[in-house]
Amino acid sequence: MTSSSSSPSALKQSLRREALRLRRGLSDRLGPAAAQAVAAWGDRLSVGTGSVIGGYWPLPGELDPRPLMEALAARGAALALPEVTAPDAPLAFRGWSPGDRLEPGPHGTAHPTPAAPRLIPTLLLVPLLAFDAKGFRLGFGGGYYDRTLDALRRGDGVVAVGLAFAAQQSPALPSEPWDQPLDMILTEEGLLTVVRA
Image (cartoon, rainbow, N blue to C red; front, side, top):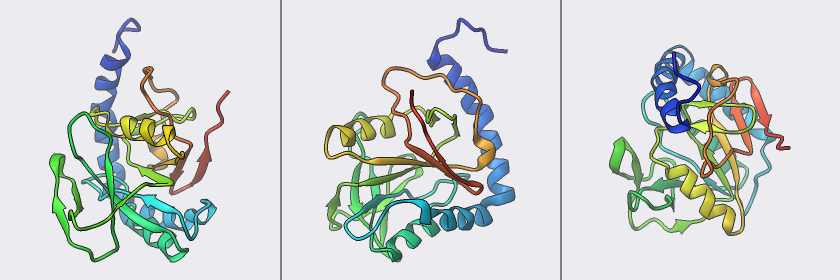
């Protein structure tokens, strides 16, 4: 049991282990079916020609965004995948289409080649370990998506959509001043729009 006096960072670290175990089990049971269900719910997202979808290449256990990305591309959106350029920098995004060659990146990731154009997402699909109704998410702790959302929100703006299995929802997650909340969460059960006070 974690003490109520623990810092948010310590609480997050404790929650990560359990959330990772839960997500692995959900992925084993629901993986491809959940990815297809999420893609079907994608018609609720406002995208079309001129939209740039910043997706991700799934790591083991993550909900696979590729069926959703392909469905959004069929509606005229351009697709992009993230690239880690430096440990403390926001993610950069390069154009990607299904079948394009990818290069290995840090932390087991894969990203487009340097020849692919840099794009700025208007809608960002965000992987996670857990989420709550306020839009806060638990990630691996590297801060990449918080830095990226902060940078994109200082520019022309972005809609941040977490992708998760519905059972990854937590009653409440600890948050810190730099945590960037999501605007929506899309699960196999539907789309949750975050309402902020």
